[in-house]
Length: 324
Image (cartoon, rainbow, N blue to C red; front, side):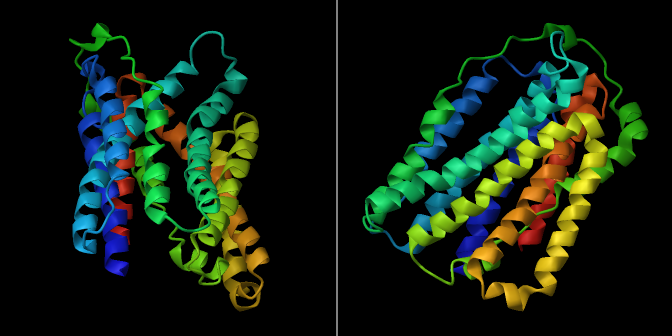
């Protein structure tokens, strides 16, 4: 089962890397008008089909189908992540938005919304598990994944094509020579991954009840939103680079504290869950909020999306290697 868990975790990362390579690192200014609609449809189909992968089939068959749909889902996530994030950040630099609030809007429109998705992805199965009393797991599975189609269908209109960039020669090599140090640093930062399966096993007391597992995970995920929103109010005042450093230092202190007092805290599940939630919240407070802003706004406008996509690809590839 541990092998299947690693396989399912890595296959979506592989799809995400592929999507970022094709749509993020390419000359995205020349992407056709219908590409955004195609990505939205891909997410909808993958989410919907994923909800029907259950039944009386053997576990190997179920895992094979899960791998197929998770890979397609990863492609949509990776492609949308790079293009949508940079597009949102560019909107915050237009007229009508104060320079002292640009990063605030950037963080709320990207990382904070992603964190809300983490919470929603746990709240729905938790609520369904409570409704069905921990039984009828096939129904809980199908509804939990099938309902995720709704958000992907809320936005499916293509953006306007910008033909101004179609015949522009962009000196990518010159940009790489100028910004390779920043690209390397952000790429390494994007690869930081926290594996929580062992910690969640401690928090839940090794319980196999989905209500307990989903409930504890939902509680911990709430710290994501708390950290991201608090960081959003400070990012313009202190700057994304300084806030990222402060967040990393605070996270390191909390992490060292959890490690040093592991045996004592592990016996108090509530305290351990709060400490671990605080650890994850600080990750969003600093690096989670600021990496997106720095990666998307460090490079010149002409190569901004390629810069961000390359940093994400290298980071996700590192995370994929780290799983195995």
